[in-house]
Image (tube, rainbow, N blue to C red; front, top):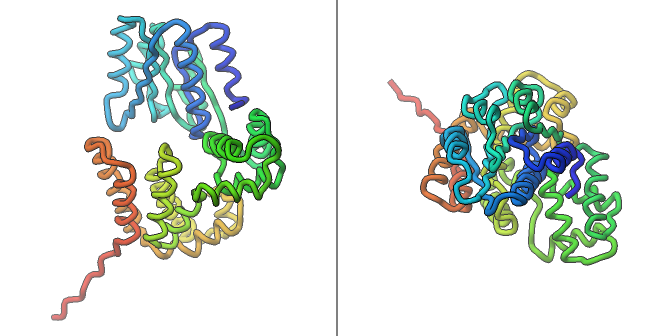
Length: 340
């Protein structure tokens, strides 16, 4: 997968062989996972095996783990990639500061943030000994070129209409797009990928586009939402459907605040970065199916379910089912008037 924003990291690894830390200022799954792959490959040249550990500072002592691994060093020739799945640009943990001052040659720390972190104090600190990767979300024309580039790498051609259809079905996440193009290539083979090929692949696999789940949640249709969500998990087991559901709820709260403020459709589209009229019209039309209290209450409940998910090793299908039912089926309480 050719991602131009990773050129600086690739050059640093080629020259030095090891980069102690990488800050990824992007929410794009494809960019994030490609960074992890690149540092893994670099460490494998000197250490074996290379173990990858992912830690979330909200749920565990991520930087305590960093400190422990750095102090232990390489006892049996192994290397480590420590992936911190969430970081705040304004915070510089003392353990990370200590590691950057005296990095371990057998370990690379990869921190996942978003584009807001690119000018943070954390980014400045990492630049001194590591690499900061900044990758904005793909916008229209670059997205077309990128999809066509992935197809060319596989030895197939994809025209403008086919690329546009794929972007509408999948979205602009590079990881999801690359997997989709590769899956269609494996189904179709060499040659030219047409719109009919994409529709045929979807029909053959019985896969459904991710927006089918979003639409069902907006419409407060539990049956359709569960069918779409569980089917997505079946065909895409690594997709975080819980995160997608939470994101939809946050968008509903956002649209409610904008409507309450009296924002026009054009203002809403600009602020929420919505490209198509039908998407914003759908949100404006459907947000009234939920109350603000319901949505806020759901976000609080989602945190409890997430803890259950991690501690009890519950399946993603079970958690998604619980959360969809919690949001879509649960009706707001109506207080009865007590007659005097």
